[in-house]
Image (cartoon, rainbow, N blue to C red; front, side, top):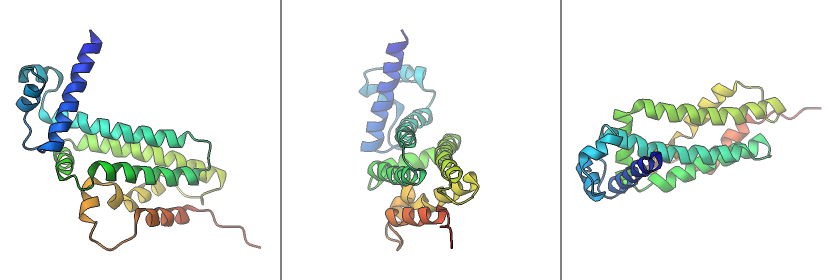
Length: 198
């Protein structure tokens, strides 16, 4: 009995994502989603109490996929610097593929930021925890300079904001500045432990 309910919930999220991408979050109604699935709006409300909740589920899937990709990189038996570089580049590429030149998907993120800030904060906390873990490993092995991993992680996230935030990626495109690769190289240089002298 649990499996069909999970399948129905998944179908609602799949359909909502398609509508959000095709016509936009604001124009999509729960009735549209229900009609496409040949069910009543009341049935959709059995699984989600509002359109906002459906949007949160769509974003949770996006963020879950990103977090899973980063977790796989963390688990690789490589130096912390190589893994951190790949995590930042992967995060940029995933967000760029999903949101760059996708105005309707950006609209969905705007709605989440206005209506579901706690869900956004939850993702930021999980993202920071993943980065902080690798930074802490690099500090412990002497690969990175002695720095507070939490403070370093917040600086890294802020430095990468224009390359990862769905809205800023579009808005900053015309502003002169470094490429994502150049910013990542700058971050890695800032973390690097000083070479012994003499």
